[in-house]
Image (cartoon, rainbow over all chains, first blue to last red; front, side, top):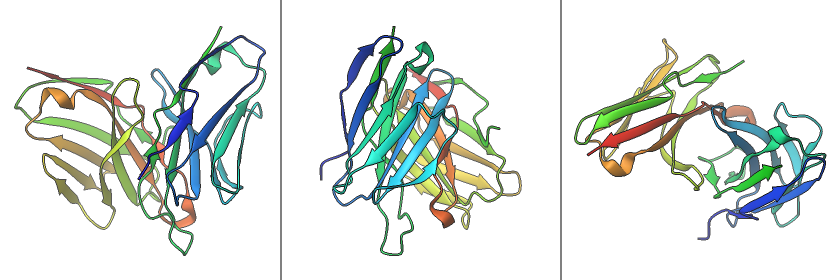
Length: 117
Length: 113
């Protein structure tokens, strides 16, 4: 089945602008998570959505927000961009059983590389 | 507060030898551990996992060992191949409560031919 799809793959913005990134999860996966990867910092958790509700949230400022649609597609938005927001933003989906507990590992997309000038 | 630590940023190994990547965690509530591999310009891909009820899980050339008392896990790759050169991330989670995966900062493995 098709994997996790992220768009756009690359984008360049200037400080103060805002950006919206999109993610389509694997078909049937209702959970979508977002991570930020910067050099030397690994993957830092931003938030997770499940059935259109934010289930978990990482330690990022309010400029970072997200949402999930009824078809499980997700978007994340970063407002008032700063130079430090330059990073690879990764989306991942995972499957949940009928009990609502996750059934396995995260499946990642290829990421959206954001450069803030 | 870094709950998952990979203290070696990089590792170089000769082709054919064993690669050992280490990972420590601090949260005793973690009960599910995973390793991911990441090539440049690609998303991380799942490699192998282990539940806290086991101390070893093997998949081909890859074996993960878990030492719960030491809160330590390791990934062994035998034999190492040049195609294994990538960044390896350790991750941990609690299966109850649907908590997110917590990742380490990664170890860059270089397998030299």
